[in-house]
Length: 98
Ligand code: SF4
Image (tube, rainbow, N blue to C red):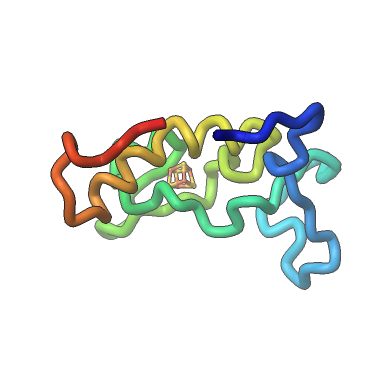
């Protein structure tokens, strides 16, 4: 059973003491989300829904700010089922979705 909270602090984290903060150039870093420092959707290739390009065949996410936005959690969670499916040794029908 999931616990209910009045807040959603788990969706946003900022680490201003990080030597790389902010790791992407932005005008205003007040909403810069560090929750997904490395994007968990990279493995989804062209299905991640982000603003990537391929440079010499390598996926380049330099221009994508989705994982560092205030809506990062929603976007990543909307795709995480596919990441779990790819990484699982179970068939799709064996994976229980909540
Ligand atoms: S950073 Fe953006 S483009 Fe790169 S994998 Fe994540 S969502 Fe896709």
